Image (cartoon, rainbow, N blue to C red; front, side, top):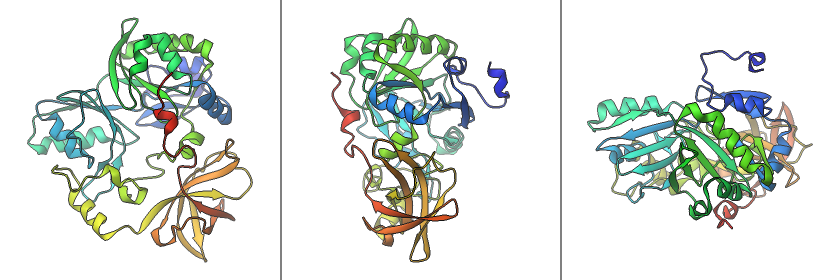
Length: 381
């Protein structure tokens, strides 16, 4: 069946590729030089499956950069402005990777598997090459490689019950943004309570790519009584939550302060990282652009934006819509936009040039739903 898609060999397939096709994947895109399923039917139904029951997503495209060696902790810190000095073994942290100008190169989850053993679970950019290049000139004793690791995301309110079916009651003790090394029927895994959904959820990092099909089927079987469906990361849910997508909401020309992510930048800490001087200067001088939420008051969007839409105020272009979608739960078109900081005034009216047509919009705060992430952080029953 997969031959019908005309896939070539130059872009990698995940260990779950055949399983996702078997379970109804009807469309793919490319992310980190790999195919990722983006279509299992109606995206709104995928959203409701996520928020009402649970979905299983092939996110093997979240490639890992593995950092080991005596200087692994110091080198990992060099990559990110977030202070990792108190990061415990078994802990995960959302971090930014910045360049010398303070621009964002990636926004991975960092996982600490050992004192000298880290993974960076990547968004869509070539941080393996960046890290390997830095290592050559760092003078540090580190090894940088991409291991045989392929994540799945199990997300939604029933994900805890499904994990309990798979791993027993002890897995319910796993705290938000912590990890555990486990086996399932002899399949080696790292399990973390993380995910790209702002729902209760887990990521299962497969450490043997030959067993991907077996793992997928095992999880789907355990989840069947709990309404588990195959799915894909939900654009609707992530925009509701104000979660960012690399290349859409940020790029190397975007700095953390513009996105309201100053909490991930510790310029005062006694740590060394790339971009420290630039970020300290930006913090002192202030920003000229700022991310805001928008409610776009037009007819219901039929899908997410595929280009950046200009944001207009008093005839002047003040920024761009970076991510937009219709939320069936909120009954609104919602968007993230990066605009001139002087115009970032809540409840102000602006115009969005949507498909070359002006439509009214209103500046609002974000996230649009569950701003304190209480759903994702809730104690598992």
